[in-house]
Length: 111
Image (cartoon, rainbow, N blue to C red; front, side, top):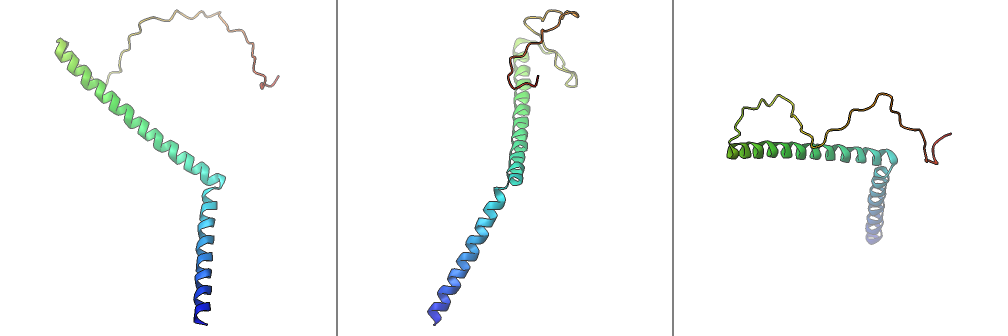
């Protein structure tokens, strides 16, 4: 009698545990939950990329200062000023009357 009660209780407990586990997994796999998980991962990745970019920028400034000191180009730089970019090739002036022809080869476009 005691044996039957023990195994019945053990089976019921295993059933409740398995049902709870399956229900939790099903809730994790709903579209809303998957979208929230993807959004969280995207935000986390964005923060990591921002940290990486800031580290790269800091390293660039430090290396530029080292090179400036080694080459004797010690000029005070105001960090609040925007970085002035020098382009190797300048783009031609855009013509005001120039217009791109509209021709689309996209078959999925509405006509």
